[in-house]
Structure formats: structure tokens, C-alpha cells
Length: 186
Image: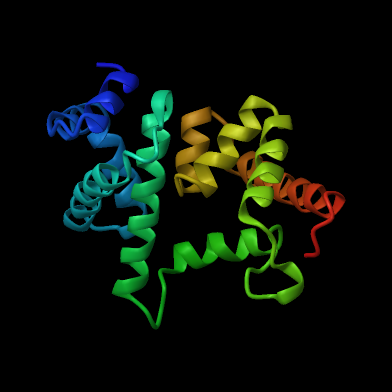
């Protein structure tokens, strides 16, 4: 069943939409959650919560052909929230490491000079990603969206770990320069 058909089931409030979503994307959503929470049971809970959230947000949102991206975004946010809730005082070192890498590129949300409209920032980042080569874009997204390790990325794309590390460093630097050029204060 294609994404439009599944979304149509959600719009009709047909519970089989959840079943079809789970069949088509369940493993991938659990993988995203598990990379963040590092616990299979919690990842399954995040996956199930994703379907509930999708049920509650479709309508008014209609992701159409982008159902996986819509569900993955929900899963990612739920997983990060779960991770934060589990360890309020000390977050996972891996998440902190990635956050620190990206802090150098993206304005801090609590800095009054850096408060910007989220939609405009998203457009600037999407513009930056759209100008990267497919390989660089995929590596960047695997690291910062899917939270893959450097080792996993190097295996997936048949690159050395040092090549992946330097590629990510250069991409972060380019993103920072792109955002400064767009007028963001970092």
C-alpha cells in the first residue's frame, strides 16, 4: 500500500492505517528510536506512541507521499523526549556529542539575538542541504538526523571513518558559513 492510500485511511479515521503504517515502516521507526534511547522496549513504546501521535495529527496535517518522513520526525522527537526524561540530570554522552557538534553551526534558541522564526531557519538548512552532493547530504543526514555512528556511516557508504569525520567537519563548517551568509548570528 502506498503512502497516499495509508494517509487516506488516517483521514477516514480507519484504524487499519496504523496496521499498514506498522507493516511498512515499523522496523525503520524502531531503529530510529533505538539509536536514540538505546533500549529495545523503550524504542517499541516510542514506535507505538508515533502511531498514536500520527492518528491525532492526521488531520489536520496531510503528509501525502512523505509519510515516512512525517512518522520518522515524530519518532525522533518522542525518542529524544524519552531520553531527556530518563536522564534529566545527565543526558546521554552520544546525544551531547552530536549536540555540541551542531551548536557551532546553528544559533542558540535561548540567545535573544538568535531568536528566529523556525520556518525560515528550516528553509535555510534545507537550501544548504539541497546544494550538497548526494553523498555528503546522505552522510550528514545519517549522522545528525538518524544519529548513526561514524563507523555505521563508513560501512553504509564504503568510506573510511576519517573520510566521514572530515566530510562532516567540512559540512558543519559550510553550514555555519551558509547561515552567516543568510544573516544569522552564531
